[in-house]
Structure formats: C-alpha cells, structure tokens
Amino acid sequence: MKIFKWRREEEVADEETQAQVDFLQSENDNLLDQVESLKLDVSELQEQNQRLTDKINRSKFQRMMIKTGIGLGILIVTYIVLMLVDTSPDHIIWLLIIESAFMILMLRGDEK
Image (cartoon, rainbow, N blue to C red; front, side, top):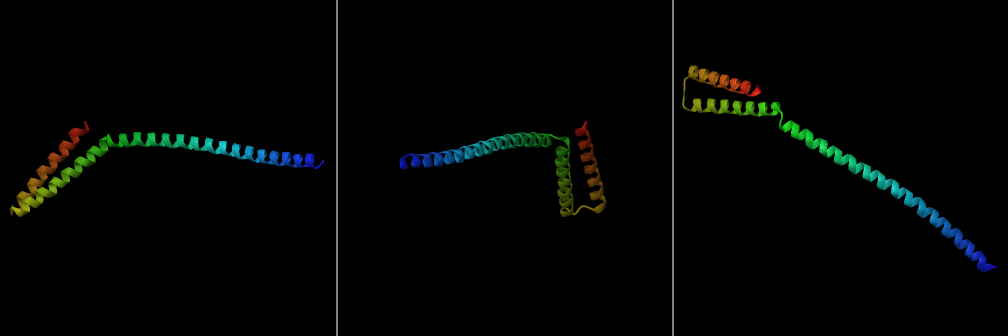
C-alpha cells in the first residue's frame, strides 16, 4: 500500500510542478509578445525620427537660417577689418548697409 501512496504523492507533486511550469511558460510567452511589440514600436519611432530629421535637414528654414548666420558673420568680420584699416565711420556705415542689402536680396532670391 505504501508504494501506491508514494506514487500518488509523486503524481500530485508532478502535477503541481507541471502547473507551475505551464503558468511560467504562459507568462514567458506573454512577456515575449510584449517585447516583440515594443521592438516594433521602437523601430517605427526610429524610422519616424529619421524621416523627420531628413525633413528638417532639407527644410528651407534651416538653409535660410544658416545663410543668415553666415551673412551676419561676414558683416561682423567686415566691420572688424574696416575698423583695423581705420576707415572713417561714414564709409563703414555705407559699406555695411550695401553688404546687408546684398545679403537680404540673396536670401530673398533663394526663397523663390
């Protein structure tokens, strides 16, 4: 009789172990599904980020800002050079106005 009882206890323990294994396996499957969906979300967001970055890089606004910055830099350098050459203030103002007008016309021509 003890042999049969021992077997039943072993079967009950095996059933409990199998139930725990099944539960853990289902949890594992759920977590793997969640990880896969997150990977897809991340890849979609990376693609969208790349697309938007490319769009910004090609935008007219960025090009205009870069050209404006370069133009202002050239104005500052011109002013410094004219001050070092000891040009009269009246000539400096007219030269900078002409250069500024040229920069503005150049930027407007690029917008069209």
